Every structure is written in structure tokens, then in C-alpha cells.
Image (tube, rainbow over all chains, first blue to last red; front, side):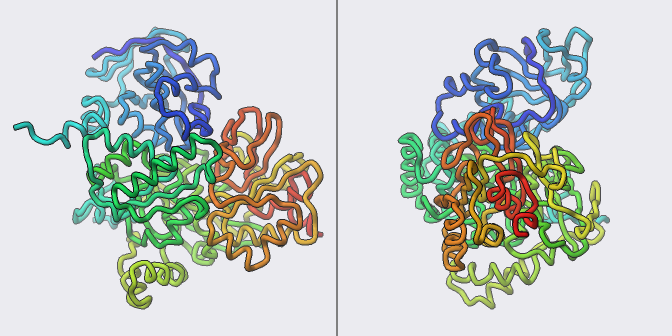
Length: 166
Length: 433
């Protein structure tokens, strides 16, 4: 599978509160409405200008802070397919896998990719192609790959827990 | 063969395996899986799985704490759904509006024990490491999966050992140590790690100041943080557990001590840090980063419009007592508000009986219902744009308290109280003369 999209590049330690503010966490349940607040306190232009297929690039410790899954779901609802970062906070990483946002931890790719350029991610070959060249990234663990392949944790569990058809 | 870390021992137990090593992925069955106001959306996800019954309702706990009493109709509706789900599924461990914050309440209720594995749909779940439990935060979908299956995949984390020696100086708390550690190592210094604390300066900490350490390790990126259980913990926890299970305290205490897990002396650690706490001073985290830390003396004089004392980090009896000592016979500065929110109803009651609530009220504090209050910007003390808050909480991200144009400084409870009196950030000794 190839993911292709425009890059929105940000810095280090982008936390969950600036990705999706806490004040919305118990009142907004619709992913489309979450999308309108994505990155609200980091980049107010993002939610209105990002396009389906776009890719977010961050520095170290992306998504530190809250366990709120909306910090992933809001990006997915905008149409973001992948997150490339130097490092990703652990709950954010799990939430990304569980909601089908491909998390790629790859400092060389972060160094190479420029804000606004269009990049391609060859998911099966673990390669990012950008203006500066091709960069390999480490594959996810088999258990994380299985969840992403199933379209996320909930779709995977629906299949696993479904009663056997007679 | 190398010895085992605490995390390796705890996750081997939770996975029902004879032994596991860092890096291994296991299916762990938590002894306690909890959620809070997010119970309602988790319940919707749970039912979307096509499952009708929670696998182990007795292992679940719900607390209404993040926005209580409900500030809006939408929040109230959210609570209604959580209560309905608990009733439908036979979840009896539901702690409703007014009881307090999940981490504090579930500790008081003795729902987690040394050696247990705890999963919580909350990032500060490592808090339960103060009980000698393995405790990690998870997302909402993962909590729905735990409800349905009773287990979740976890990677066994690498571990770091932090060894604390020395006598705690007057006015220096476990909060100051945490800010210093995170300031030294950076907010990602513990990412994916289990942080295991031990040493004489851990054992000498009071019960109330212990949870601060694993709680704050969430801000360090840690998966889990652990304090070695000791006699003072067993003395505190065993009578509570005994009440819960209806058995004699002595028997419960014995079983609890036997179940506790300790790392082997030859366990493999990625790094070991040693701090002599006698060399520490009160520390402040500046906006908008928990690792932007300076000694109190270098931050003195910053004007503050709101001081907030509370949260799972520093809203316990000892914290309220420290604040009461500072404000006794004094008044909150004109132009400054002092919001105090006990972490639980038990803390509130104890503070009331000890006279701390009266002392705080007399000084001009506003006392709120036990819960998270304004910590994540929901209600009960959110700042206006361009205002400055000093808070005893754990997190000061931009926008955290409701507006991106406000600033939040983090400090220990006595510094928060002294700042409320002075109207600017100040050393409590200066206020108390």
C-alpha cells in the first residue's frame, strides 16, 4: 500500500492538549466535529486547510500528555493517514495503531522532510519517499501490524468476537 | 541469568507466564480496569463490538470526577450513560459525583494491591505504582477491549532505577523532586519506561506524599512507575482492604505482603539515577512545559491571578494542611483567587475535622467539590486569557486550563498557598515571616 499526501510539519513535544483540547473531551462525540478542533491550539489553520491523505510530521515526544483518543481520532477524521515523528508518546502510539493512523518513528525521515512537500509512504516496503530521497523506517511489531491491517482495534475485535457463522 | 525488574515480575504474573523479559509482548489480564467520565463513550464502543456482557464486572471501577458536579447538560447526560452502563453490567464499584478523583478514590477504596496490574483510561494511571502495582494508562478503545476480553496486549517495558537518599529538607516535597528529575532528564526522559524508585528517602516519605512520584512520572513519558511497598504502606492499606473483603486485618496484611513484588538486586536497568534529596530546593515548572524547571528563588515575583490547590497530584490531606499552615491568620491577596479542591471526600472530611477547611475559608479560599476541577479546563476555576495560574497539578500545557492564552506554573502546595497570599510567586517562608 502507498500513502501519498502533503506534509504538515511541527516541532518537538506536541502534546495532546494542543492536538485536541481537554475542554471538549466529554461533550464532543462526533468524529466530524472532532476534526474541526484538530490541532486547534497548535495550528489554527490546520483543521480548515488539511486534505484527506495529508501526513503529519512531528519531532520528539509527539502526543505526550493525556490518554484522550480524540487526539488521534480528530486527525483521522481530517483524513490524516500517517504520523512520522522522532518519538511518539506511548499512549498516543497505541491509540494511533488502534485507530488506523500509521505511526512511523524515524528521525532521519523527520530531518529530511520539509513542511508542505508531498511525500509517499510505501507501507509494505517500510520506505518514505520525499524530495530529499528514500528513507527506510523500522516496521511495527507484528501485533501492531495485525491491528492496523484489520483497520484498527475495534474492527479487529468485532471479527474475533463475532459468533461463528453456521 | 540476570534478575528481574519489578515490571518483568508484575507482567509475568498478569500474563500467567513463568517469566517475561523487557521487549516481550504479552496479553496481560488486569486486576483492576478503571475509567471515569469517559465511561460513557467507552460503553458505546463496547456495545459496538457486538458484545453484551462485560467479562469481569468485578474488576471494573468507574469514578465520576473529571467534570463534577456536571457543568453542562451534555456533561450530565454523559454521567447518566455511565451510571446506566454500570447498572446494566453489574459494575458495583462506581463512585459518583462528590467522591473524588479516580486515582485517589480507588487507592482509598483499596481496589488495587501491591503486585496487581492496573489499567486505566487515564494518562495518570501510573499513580497506582505508589501501592507497588504495575499501572499503565490506555485509550478508550483499549478499555472497551479489556471490558470485552479481560485482557490487553502490553509490551514489557525496559526499566530505569532511581535511588533516593538523604533527609528531605523543610519545605521540599516529593513534587519538587519530580520537577527536578523531569527538568534534568526532559519530558521524554522516561518514554516507554518503567521507573522503579527505592532508597531510604522513598521509605521516609509520608503516605500522602508518595503518590506524587508515580503520578508525575506520566509527565516523564513513563509507562509505569513503582515505589517499593513497605510496612507503612501495608499499615495504611491493609485495614482498608480488610473492610472491603470482610476479613481480619492481620490476615489481609499478611497476604498483601506476600503478594508484593520487588525487583531482584541484579535486575537489568537501562540507567540508574541517584539523587540526594537533602540537596533539593523548591522547584517551579514554567509555562508551558513540565520540564522548563527553575528553582523557586529564580521565579519569585511573577504576578498570579489564580492559585489552584488540588488534583490527583497534590490534593491530599497533607497538602491541604501545608496550605492551611501558610494561610493561617492571613488573607488572599487582592486581585488573586485561591481555588482549593480536595482530591476526595475522605480528604475533605479529614481536612474539615482538622480545621484546615475553616482556616482556608477564613483566608478567602474558594472550596470546590472533590474532583479534577479546572485542571484540564472543564470548569470550576478556568482562567481568562492573559491570566496567570499557579497550580499544584501535574500538567501545564498551553491551553490546558481552557484557553491557550493563559499561563500555568506548577509548584508544591505550600508555594501555591503562599502565592495566593502574596499575589505573586513567593517562598512560603517569606509569607510566614
